[in-house]
Each structure stands twice: as structure tokens, then as C-alpha cells.
Image (cartoon, rainbow, N blue to C red):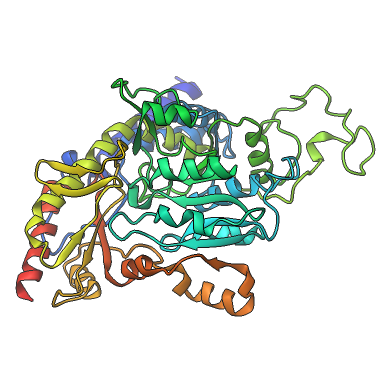
Length: 496
């Protein structure tokens, strides 16, 4: 009896789930991970893909449909992620770095009022220590990054330096990341941006699911009156996800991040709908047309436009208003992302629990190690964090567990990292450290000294570069892995 395509697809997907359940046991969430763990032999990654047969089935199903380019799965994922965050629009791109590029490029469009448009030579305030592609788009678009320092305790910007970095008529934006899933001081940064009519670009690539809470009166004065979707009100604070406080924000879906589609990222349009068409244009070759792939004449006047010096009636699908790119991901990737999004709340909780477990397990090493603090925390105890008097607070969906080796310790962070490496424990330094020390930026300053500006001594960024290292907090870590990490570090410190 001949089987229908639908019946064949269902059988393929059933077998796909069976295959994945057998083959991908090591990629399940930590509590479900049945793969054998042998301390010293099994690698403990600092991050990795966490998935079940749901994602594999979704990828195979979308591939069988063979749309391939961004299509119905992508449109659904964009809508679902925007709904989770509570933003106006989300646009998928092929990486977090591309997301930063598209988000920043959108602010350079000639379609913005002149006083808001970022043009070559305009300045953008950013932070010295971090990942290079938070800063690269500023330079790639011809603007000038102005660097302020990092607070080593949080990894985030020293916000008291913002005013010193500002130049009337030159500064147009602030663009910075929430370091390792620790929200930067959004209260201070947003007030600064409002005071000077600046754009705020939130690089949220390491921080999906983090929240920032601000007292209601202060939030209302800045225009925020509602919590993000699904976050209940406590009657005293406005609580929103990071990536929803600025004008435009970005996500990364590379495997180490909070959810993955292999490669991939997103640009979130928070509250200014016109930014969607600008970002979409830069993502999609620079075209003026906003029709989705495979759809024609959304505007109803495809052959009635006259733009530039083109003849009237030139096909709107081939009119280009920007010097753009092609940065879309594939539809099977979006199908994976949709399944990952369903698991995101559990992933967020696992990251928090893993960070707390490491912190408690290493608590008696404070003679040698400085531990990170969430923004607006002044100390830690087994009962929780001690908060400052701003009334603001953060809830971190940690990307990593950062520690700093004290200068008085009889070992360095490189010694510790090397030792962890021999024990097959994944670890990383804080990305590029002080970016001004990186070869690309050293060469840039030699070739074009005017291409960047340093607004304050970068003492904290150097401190992070010279002392910081981080472990993973990702949801694939089991308790046995975390215990092994803790005991390995404790033994190393005792041996010194």
C-alpha cells in the first residue's frame, strides 16, 4: 500500500526522535543527563548546546519542508520571541555579531532626523572590556567609540564616567553589553541617555532572561509603566527583561548562549516601530521594499514608486535605500529556536542555580579569589546579596561564573586556567579583556588615532584582563560536574 507524504513524514520524525533519544544523551539538561561522567576524563565544557529530541525533530521537519531560507518558522519565532520579551518587533539574523551590526547600522539611516542620525565622526560611548563585536560596528559604520572603564566587581560600565565621556553635538548613543548576564546599571544609563537625547543600544547577547527592577516612581519618570509579559507586579517596582529598556537590542543564539539555533541572532525593536524597517533594510541587502520573502506588493504600489534617480514605476523590490547586507538565518534554524524558546524559563532557572551552587561551594576561598557581584549588590552572604540604596535590583540569568584572582594570591588567573584545562574543565577569560590592548585596536590607533577616544583611565578593564576567568553556568552542567569543578579549584588553591 502506497503511503502518503504526510504518513512518510510522520514516520521519519518518529524515527528521528528515537535516534536523537539514543544519540544525544550528553546534550540533555543537567538533571536529565544520563551520560556517564568520569572526573578528569569527561570534559566539563564552559558552555554548550542543551537540547532534546524536540529540537532535532523540528530541524528535520523544517528541512523536509525544504523552505530553507527564512520563512514561516522564522516569522513564527520572531513573533514568539518578541512576545516573550514584550517588544514591538524582533528580526532574526545569522549571528549575534550581525545583530549588533544591523542594530547600529539602523541608527545611521538618512531616514532619521539629522540630530538623531549617527554619521561618520559622531561619537558612541561604550565599555573597554568585553567582546569585540559590541564595539566593531561603531567603527565599521564610521563612528567613534569612546571608551569608559569597567567596574571589576560587576564587569559592567563605571556609570559615573558617562558625563565625562559626553561631548555636546558629537555624542549620539551609548552601546554596551550586559556582561556575562549581569545587567548594567540601566537606571543611571537611561537617565543619562534621556538627559542628552541619546540612543541606547543594549547588547543583550549574554543576558537573555535577565531582569532589571526599578522603583515605580523612577521608572515612570523615564516612561516605563509596565512589567515585561509574565512578570507579576509587586506594587513597588517596574521589572522588565534586559533588552527591553533601550531603543534597540540584540541577541545571540550561538551554542554557548541562553538558547541556540546553531548560528543565529536577533535584533529587538523595543518601542520605536520605524526602526524595524530600517534594520530590516540593512539586514536584507539594503532594499527599500519591506515585503516578506515570497510575497509581492505589500505596499499596494509596487510599480508606482519614484525614489532616487530611478524612473517612476521601477520595481520596488529592487530599489535600495541603504548599503546593506544579507544577514538572514535559515528556516530550519528558526524551527530549532522555537523549541529552545519553550525551554528558556527552565534554562534561566538552571543558570541561576548553577551560579549559586558554585558561589557557595567556593565561598571559603575569599582570601585568594574575588567573586563577582550583581549590579546594585554590595556584598554576598549565604542568605543572599546585600543591596545598595538605589532601590534598583537585578535578577541575573548568568552566562558565566566570573572570579578574579587577587594580586596577593600565590598563583595567577593564567595558572588557574591552565590547571583547569589539564583537568578538562572548560574556562574562559572575559572575552577580549581590555580591548584597547588587542592587536586590532593597537593597529587602529597607529593607523588612525582619531578613530577612537578613551575618556577615562582603564584601570578596571586592565584589572579584569589581568585577573579574571570564568566557568560555565549553562543548563547542561550536572551536580557531579559542578562538584568536580569546586573540588578541583579547592585542591589547586590548597596546593599553592
